[in-house]
Length: 127
Figure 1 (cartoon, one colour):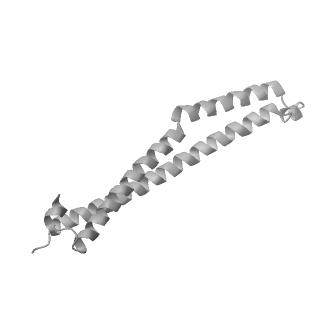
Figure 2: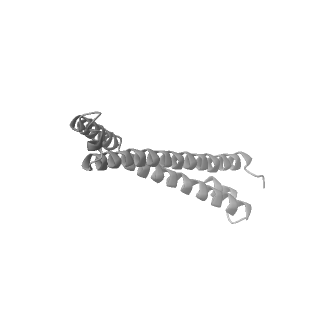
Figure 3: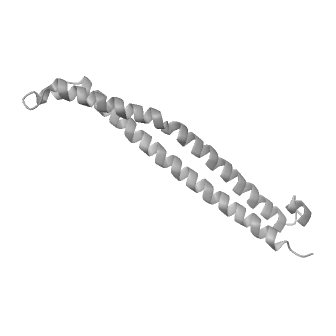
């Protein structure tokens, strides 16, 4: 019985491509999560600064009301950017796709192992 070399090659390539796809989606999810955390952290820091007496200490240099207004605008802009780009939804979607690729990779490797161990024959491998 000859080995279906091309089919085996294709299955190995599918498992490898799926693993690469998984890795890329998980990396993208981590990157989006990091950006979302940074934007959110700055929104919190700015809003806490606005709500405190922090800007009143600059009375001699600048009008605290002007600084407060500018930082309020900045906080609102950052919050709007976070909402518009919806980083948490992107993270969720990238992780979901990454898990699908992981499943494909695992199932393909399981199929190849079953073939090598003789549990699956050539016809079943084709299917």
